Each structure stands twice: as structure tokens, then as C-alpha cells.
Length: 259
Image (cartoon, rainbow, N blue to C red; front, side):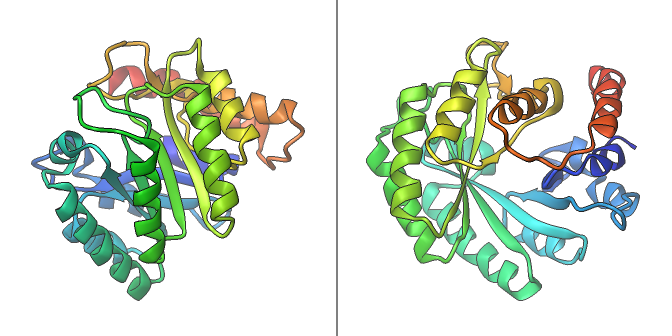
């Protein structure tokens, strides 16, 4: 019911679930069932499903209602192993396979560069590594790339530098941002990305969610309503149904405390 309410709002893309092993994430074992209960005929929103391997990509590709497959590719070796139980080299091979699956099933691959602004493990990080990963993905014909601040470590300066550089160097690529932040720093991060040319933002209503590796329990997803408020002040036309958005906001109070 909650996802169907989000479909009424008119978001461009909704991440509705994951095709992953039920043993790994039991909470996502009913993704196919949820998909069958969605009402998409009157919605302009598109669905994105997160996959962790080729098996998940193949399962997701069989559903005509899904438009995007999202895969988390980390530039931190430690996090890649923790997140998908694979090395970075294996994950890159997975990206290649998923891209072929997408091409054969008329889906589009969204690759997330997780730990894209640093990591808490001491794994080596630099903006040059980020650029190398971007170049590799472009060579694989990946058209949508989202930089993910998995543990809320990014600074406005980092965000500005990376997006200003990437959007100018690769104007044909749709760059997005998946930021985790404390409420106190979220607006300055949104502003840095927007000013640097980013037009694709991930968010969650009221900022629910986060990463267990974050040191601060207040670090969670960017609140969708904060992104909307910011973009509205910048006179960005969003074409969202605000009445349905308010209904969705009310529903979050009953949905998330129980999950």
C-alpha cells in the first residue's frame, strides 16, 4: 500500500525492493509478491530494483514492470566483500554481465559507486580512483552512475569538486548522488551537488534508513522532503502531486516504526 501511494506522487524513479538471496536479506524475500501488487497503469514513475549478482539481475530482468537494475560497485575492497560477498574484480565482472542482461531485456543499469567519498576501513581512497571507476563504467556503456556517500563522510567541497569535474568531462552521462547525512548537514550537501550540475538525487521520506557502518546513528538517507523543499526554492519544476505526497508522509509514521 505504501509503495502504491508513492506511485501516485509522481517521483521519477522508485527503488521498490531488491532481488537478492532470501538467506542474505530475509526482509527482501517477498519482492516478487510486492511487485505483483503494484498499480502502475496511472503512474509516470519507473521502478528500480537493486541486485547483488547476476542471478538477481536475471530474476529482475524477467519482470516487464521494472525499468532499472541497480548494482552497488564499491571502491572499497572491504565494503565490496561485506556488501556483495565478492572482490572488486569480481564485482566488475558482475557489472559486465548485468549490463549484457539489461541490454537483452530492455532494462537500464544504474551503477552506484559506493564509498565514493571515502570509507571507514582505511582502504585507500582518492578522487583519481573515482575517476578511474567512472571511465571503466563508461567503457562498458553504463549511462547512469550514482556516487554514494555510504557512511556520511562527504563534505560539500568533495561533492562540488567531483560533480563539477564529472558533469563537464562526461556530459552524456547521467550522474546521480546517493548521500547519507545527518540532518544538520543535509542541505549543504544537496546544494553542493545541485550547484555542481547534479540533477539526480536519491532520497527516502523522512530520511529513514542508513548504513550500519556509520559512526553516527543520526546519519541516514537524505530526506526526500528536504530535497523537494530545496529544489522548490531553486524554482525547479518537479511535477509532483503534493496532496498525494502529504498522504505518503503520513503513512511513513505507521510503516517505518514497525520495520
